Length: 147
Length: 186
Image (cartoon, rainbow over all chains, first blue to last red; front, top):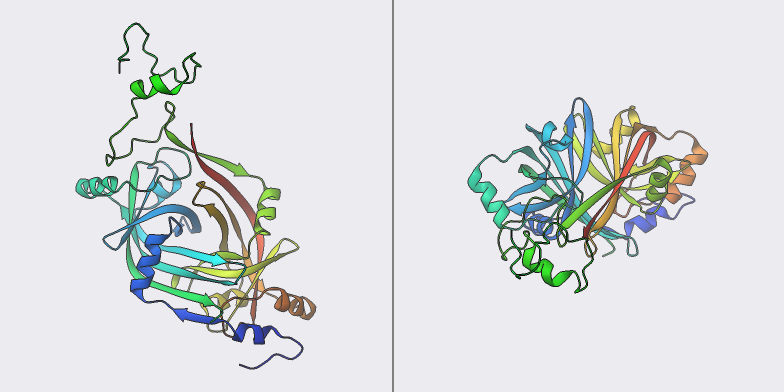
């Protein structure tokens, strides 16, 4: 690591680590965090929504309103999903990124399965009767912090 | 739903009215939302006492900027050459402009080379009390060319991850919105 002149920042950075997580570890973390962020493109603009999600059969699910922007915008399209956990005090944490395809859940058996899992109540208000499923294409994650 | 205690009117639907005997005892008998463990949750509507209800409230621009200052990790979403990207960054807000650093090889580096529309998100959530807030900033990206500002930011914006991250990216906000959410027992 080349040290920048007149600055100690590279030295500080070189003390931290940046480790890729295995896919297995990513799924464990995806199950451990109740809130993630969903990004998608609608009408040419990028949107991000924090969502309460659950993991089921290696897919991601969340509940939304069929009348809100997430419910109406998402048909069958590419999405990105992110979760992280950070500790400002130790300047460490991890993040998991999922890229996949989101679609409405229309299979009634699957809806029953999800309802039976007592999925987390969305923290926001409104009627959220619709399930969105994200089928992952890629799952990656990293852990950063002091060794 | 009928009240089972004879001699009293059915009070279901009137749970907010005070009663001399206290609100809960009768209410548990008549509350139609009582359910067995393991059964699906009912639709979350405005309902009688005991139903968990969520609430959302919009935040004004001043509140949004104040909240952005309270944390140091945000997420940047944009459509790049490889499609939709959503990536966490360590950032700093200086004079209402968001700055972050990245490496030359990151897909984020393209944001310093051309002005792209991005969405920047920060949030906070408390699992125990089930409340939180989120702030969204849409804006345009660009490089940081002023050497004085570059030096200042390089010492202020320190990525937690290892590696050399010499590329500074600015996001000039064009629109900022936020909301807070909370689940509460009614």
